[in-house]
Structure formats: structure tokens, C-alpha cells
View 1: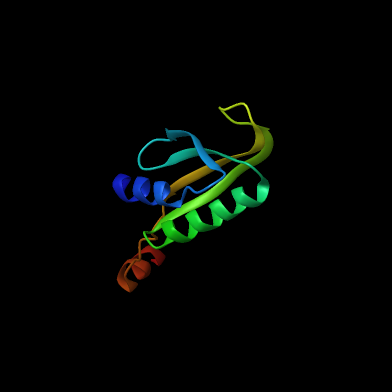
View 2: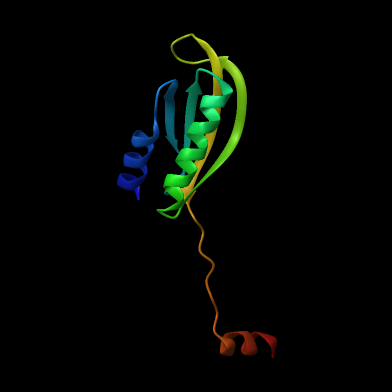
Length: 102
């Protein structure tokens, strides 16, 4: 998981976007702090990252977006993203469902 996630994250970062921080939220979940020169570039980054990670079964959720200065002190857009593997529902057999109903 970690290798796929980091590789795709780095491949997605383009002009006008900087990864300001990466923190584990426990297990295989991460918070990614992103700075972009403007909201449009931040939005494009999130769309592309979401598309690329979805092919690997990894989800992206935007936790917050606001104007602010990144670590370089330049005014832009700050985004906080939650990244984690998709939760897979456990299918139960018909027998288990029948047993539960009795």
C-alpha cells in the first residue's frame, strides 16, 4: 500500500502544487497537506490524485480547503486530504443470514 500510494502521489504533483505535509492517521490512513498557487490548480491536483489512486483501491477525501500561506510563505490555497484504502464490505453467505434471523 505505502509504496503504491507514495509513487502515485509523487507522480501527480505538478506545477503550482506542493506537498506541505504527510502524516499517518494510524494503520494505512494518511493526512496529506497540500498547497497550491490557486484553487483551480489545487482542484485539478485532487481530481487527478483521486483518479489515479482509485485504480489502486485507495480513496481521497478533501477534509478542508482555505486560503493561506504555504511553508514557503506564499499566499495560495491550502488543502487537507484524507487518504486510505477503500473499505471492502464483507459478504455473508445466505446460511449466515438465515442463522442470524432465527
